[in-house]
Length: 179
Image (cartoon, rainbow, N blue to C red; front, side, top):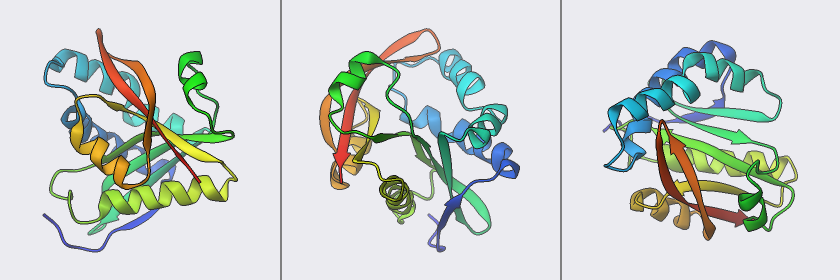
């Protein structure tokens, strides 16, 4: 575990490859045990590749925050400032306007030393600065560690949704936090 200080700033296009590398390591750790390597790889290729991060970084409705320690990206958060695309999720979220915390991942070896908390604090600050009433996110129902973390930061379960990884359908909690 690294005890080096962490800084969180907005990512830039030159960070796309490093963000994709972090995503490739961290996303599988958050998947339920029944997730297949092929489905995880397909999701990473489709949603978390360096090219996709390039798109996210160019999208005015998205903000990518990077956590840096020892001059290396060790975590990231992806915020999406748009209404939930899924009408069922939109009906669950009673905050408007809202920002989705679409992704939040930290490399192993940096858990437990404040990186996740720094990313969450920055994400919440971004949402407040944008005048949002709150934030929402989806978290796998089997990911108890992440759920504890989100509850610690004031999130409450608003309902459930499904999430597709490759060919597999997973079940998430929808959590929200008001300001």
